[in-house]
Length: 501
Image (tube, rainbow, N blue to C red; front, side):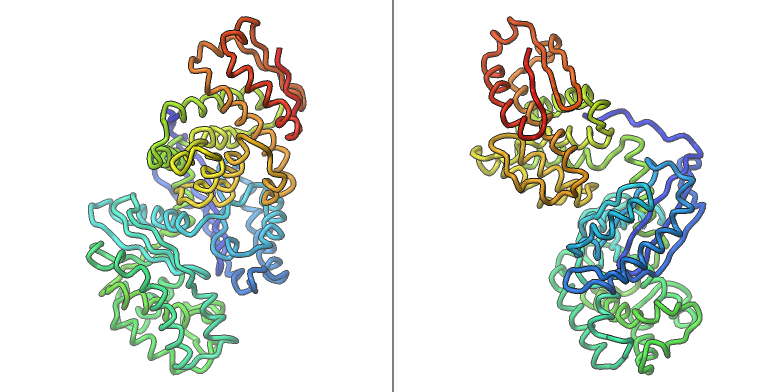
């Protein structure tokens, strides 16, 4: 399945957009001599997370976000859609009505929005930070305080070793502990204690014995560093002593609007106390003495990840290979079904409007269709789907994992009428067509030789799929023939007429 890396041409322009809980961050960059050179960077504090109530995103928050994207879209018009990556993080992960935002947002931007799981967000943050630092052998702890979550990564060079995302962020904490911008020692202590409890759950795995230096990423840490530097307590970076001095200084104010310091925006003032409370808890629980601050973050990580995808060095390929190995799946069968799936998909791609991304996802679904046999051979498709939906798969968005799970769940047996309810209406028809191809590939896995399929011809016309074999082929493959004929009825429920000649 892996392909030979093809370098992107020098001068290629790429873009990444991070739809964070506090801010939206856009970067447009040019590839020059293998390095990423930023052309434009934009950031707006949309505070999407402030509009999240009971896992429902408010109309006002969505309007703020869409208005911001209207402005960003003007710059993105100069970039090829295939070279743009947009991701949503904590707030969009949590919001049950996220499609009320992402559907119009995708129309504005002209590209899909990938909502990523917390650990995938952490991986992308680390990738951005690692490329901003010296390429040495030192192991490092990277912490990124976002608006709704905080990511913790231990890694070395460009490879993360441990990834974690906790639900504590400067916007959500400001809303909970400092409502309406009111500041008090009691509120700060409550925020600090709450963050301490959350971080204590990962303390052993992320303690100082696991890394050599600590690095802070995000606007929160950058704002803290700026305030400490302006006070003259340190030239750069953060330590416990300066952090505590900043806490005492800011607690002299009764309201966020009173924190009038150079370099601190109005919207950052509203969340800075929450950010300091979380930062102090991070320092205390993980025994950090000093922390350097990196300019690299999620959006830079997205750019480097996109370069890898476009050059066929896709981390998702490694994730699927590792998943197949982890559950001791028959690798020969996995490769066979992946091969059959790709063969079928390419044959019908033009008529059924399958994109290269669709074919990739189908191929990966074929490769891991039977990982569930590690749990039980009976109903293995259900177990495979469960694993795909709940495993950490670096490189995959939440939507991609859900689609893989749905395809694998529907590869055999009776169809669950509610199987595709989780998908947006416009995508269900294509998913049904993709499921047809995976079902056929699973049936054709009993044909072990590629040569045995050379005499097969595939013809497709709208929703009619015709497979033609010589008469003696059916005689030589009685099991496959029986399975193909049995599949016709189920496939018709997916909207496709299968004809065998």
